[in-house]
Image (cartoon, rainbow, N blue to C red; front, side):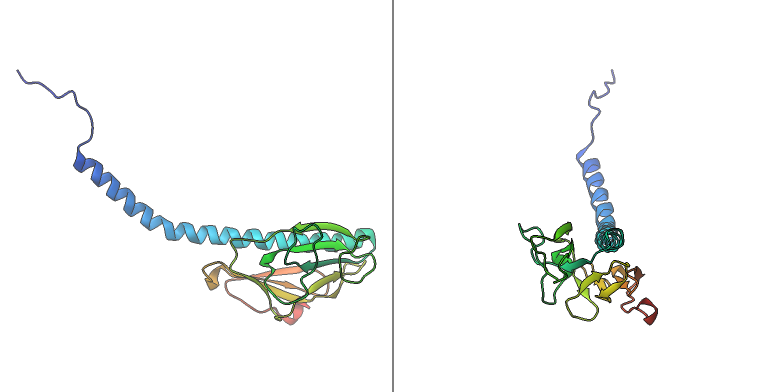
Length: 187
């Protein structure tokens, strides 16, 4: 009498082959996934920045007052302030109505937006190297702060870099693929 085994499981060799193939597929997918995650992170940072610029500009026009956007080293503090020295915008920024037009967030000013620090940033730096403050006039035009910001991925891959050019009209333009300068048409 020929008995068939009631065991329908995998052999040890079959299980090892499946584990090895899975390991190979994961090893091939990780670099591609890292690039996708970095691209998404840079895109999110750029979108937050441009959203804050648009908010500052539109509030200046809507309210007929000066609105400022500046880098802050502690944007989520009880009383945030502009940084005042050059550094990475990855630390965050604030947007506020500057009623007395002194460039600082005072008790009579209105805080409109706070952007906290980006932990997954390779750096967000000013093109001029100076610390800039965007000062939007009631017309929506910039009184100061014309510059560009470079958004760099953690791996510092130039193809992931995005540069946001901000002109006197208060509008932003994005350059991609490692282009690191803005044209004179942006100012």
